[in-house]
Amino acid sequence: MRVLHVAAECHPLVKTGGLADVVGALPQAIAELGADVRLLLPGLPQIADALQEREDLYTLGPLFGAGRITLCRGLVPSQSVPLYMIDAPYLYRRRGGPYQDQDGTEWSDNLQRFALLGWIAAHVAAGELDPTWAADVVHAHDWHAGLACAYLKAQPGTRAKTVFTVHNLAFQGLFPAAEFGALGLPREMLQSQALEYHGKLSFLKAGLAYADRITTVSPTYATEIATHEFGCGMDGVIRHRGADVFGILNGVDPSVWNPQTDAHLPAHFSARSPAGKKRCKQALQSEMGLAEEPDAPLFALVSRLTHQKGVDLLLAALPALLERGAQFAVLGAGDPGLEELLSGASRARPKRMAVRIGYDEALAHRLIAGSDAVLVPSRFEPCGLTQLYGLRYGTLPVVRKTGGLADTVVDAVDSAAADVGTGFVFDGAAGPELEAAVLRAMRFYREPERWRSLMRRAMAQDFSWHEAARRTLTLYDALLGVPREALAPHKPSPALA
Ligand code: ADP
Ligand code: GLC
Image 1 (cartoon, helix red, strand yellow):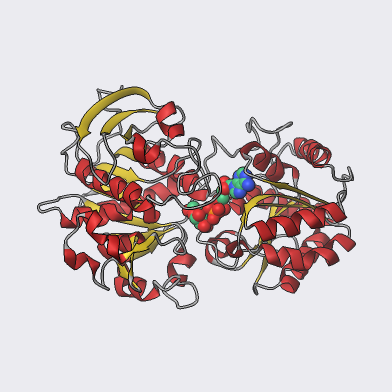
Image 2 (spheres, helix red, strand yellow):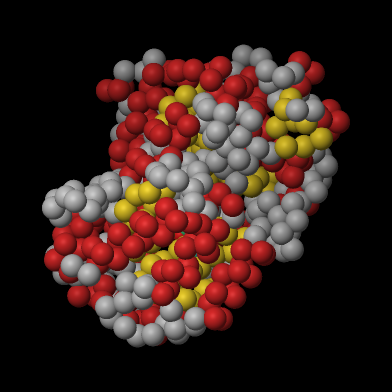
């Protein structure tokens, strides 16, 4: 089975959030199960610079205002699956992020940039750009890759089936409907059952309308997005797709997040040998300028600072929690108002509340490792990865009961003995609810044996990519009608071996 994954970011090359972690891990995990998997990414500077053994396969004339476009194939360190990269310097080689410039403004030509990604995906899948390979399944991630599903649908005689994964329904890839003509798609695709969305066009809707199957990144979020509350205006479309929508939980990549080997940590640890965690905590308190109190409960937040992530809930609960002796270590970037409120709180109580504004992969690891608990008070959370990393590092998650958070953290109820629970779960998106959950965590923390038992249970949880890959492959099988045994073991293609 030949599978083409299509995405805009991939850890460790380009990352703005959990999407990159997934794209960096899931295709490899599926390849390990025997499928011939390849990844298609835009030629952003970090990707183009990392590409090794580059082979130019096809040069195209001007498309989407791109000038010269070359499809190439190669390998990147840290990825075992071969990579197709679209080298289109005019659209992709620029300083800034994958979606925004250095000031945080969306690139004005995102329509062209991601239309090209979808167009190339469809033509690679059809075997037109690499004469040695075509896809049986195209697996497109988020709105950036959504148009792949529309181009494939519009291509007569296409064999490839499509799977579209929604990592976050709030990001919809909206553009003026007047620009539809630039996409080169049939006119009927601008209907309300297709790309049209309240007078605009939506790349997300292209995936939702035309993919053969839709997945999202947790079972609970798969149910939530069919409701008005979580549907971000797309719930009608989701309901219409009915049984075509599946929730498959994300996993953790142990080559990146493993407290026994993590190169970013000052000391290593495991459930059996936890001493290194204390050293990580002490080093973190020192690095962040917090009071070096080994017994102060230390809560981490590693997050985009946005409304979704419930940062305002933390701000509301902070005064009471600081008063009760909690410490906080925050790493994040996003909404300037939230950044300033967090920084202000830190200036007022620097020994108890430390804040770093920015994106820092290594510090994220040190925060998850060195803290006692990690906060994820999201209003909605398709899956969430920081709570999974917390579980693995014995850093107990304090989470809101929504999406993937509800699927991955079991509440340690006050009344029970220490034989249930892996963290602390609260219901309402309100400061007092978060405050109560953190206070509950602090009560457990003051009973070291109870806390250690929770940590051991948390660290024993298995959120492996193997399971997600197995479920995804089952979905591909069902789409193609392939009996499982027919899959050949994975071998790198001779051209790349
Ligand atoms: P989302 O994708 O919605 O942002 P996830 O929990 O799925 O949320 O994934 C977030 C990923 O980004 C995690 O790997 C987390 O460690 C990382 N991350 C978030 N903010 C930062 C930051 N400021 N610096 C470094 N890593 C961050
Ligand atoms: C999105 C979601 C997050 C999820 C990630 C990876 O960014 O917000 O919940 O974990 O994608 O699937």
